[in-house]
Each structure stands twice: as structure tokens, then as C-alpha cells.
Image 1 (cartoon, one colour):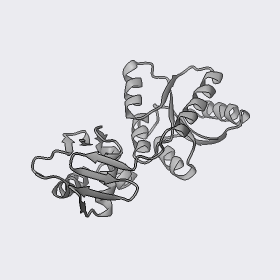
Image 2 (cartoon, one colour):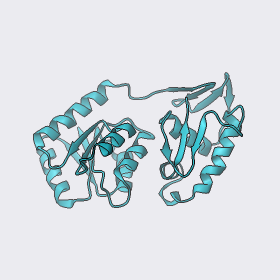
Image 3 (tube, helix red, strand yellow):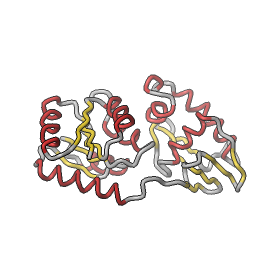
Image 4 (cartoon, helix red, strand yellow):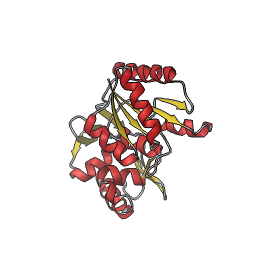
Length: 224
């Protein structure tokens, strides 16, 4: 089994890698959020062990980024003990939460359990229903009232990301990073332009959207 360890503490990362390899794991490491997202796409780990306190992105942003395209189990390993931090991480899609300091045996057990749950769960949701919209994630098609809606590749990438987080707010920075790339995470005008284009195609009344909803200053939600 392959684990992606994401932590900016080199000594801890090294110790984790040694212990995990000693127990038969293949280990990939990343020291920041952007490297973690790239490593997950390249190495396709069986589970991600993620610290929340990263130097470039908050760990919750990494969770959102991963959940935009993969169901890989995520076990948070963090020094944050506040309940709200745990709730936020789990709500965003983390599968488990371990606080530092930790016992290695417990961590190994939680990693194994996360992998088992991931293997037994359905790995891909193929159809997302949102009112009169049907979004086929496998075939990359959208229908409204049975009629196919033609989208550009960028419009599809935007809508697909929201569909995979149906009913949940996706932060602006996450959308920009996942659809356009890390260099565009401040280009919020892109979101306004493409949200307007999408609404003209998927909403009955684009001026009063029912499905593609903006939360001012925060992000977008695809409402069911």
C-alpha cells in the first residue's frame, strides 16, 4: 500500500517514513500543499496522511483540492486540538483525524482502517442530480430536462468541481487552482465570467440562479 505523507516538519516526516516503510508501506512525501496535490495526481496513493499547518496552503484547502477529483482516504495528522478544526476537516472530506502527539501503533491502525473503508466504498459517483440537471461525471455530459447542454472544457471543469461537492461551498481559491492552475489563484474575475456563462446554460432564470449560487467573497455552491 502506498501512503502520501504531507507535513512541513522534516524530522517528523523522516521518522514517519522510516516507521511506515518498516511496516511494509510505500511512502511518498510532500512538504507543502501544492506539492501534495501534485504528488497525489502523480503517484495515486492508497491513503493520504495530511498535516493542516502547511507553509503555503491550509490543510483544509488541500482536502478540498483532493476531493475535487479523488476519493482517496485522507487521515489528518495535526497539532490543532480545537473541535471546530476537526469538524471542518471532516466536513470537507477527511476520513479520520489524529492529533499530535500520537502513538505509532494507533496511527498505523487508523491508516489501515481508512484504506479498508476506501476499498469497500463506491469509488466513483457517476451521476449527480441537481433539480432539473443531470451531470454525468463519467461521460462528461450535462442534461437539463433531458436535453444535452453543451459546455466548453473550462465550463465543464468548473461545473464538475462543484458537482463533486454538491451542496457544499467550494472556496474561490480552490476553484481557480483546480480549474486554471496554481498561478491563477488570485484571478477572481475568471470566476465571475465563467459563472455567468454557466448560468446562461444551466439555469432557467440566470438572473436568479437556483443551482449555481455565489457566496459573496467566499466561493460557489452547486445546490441540489
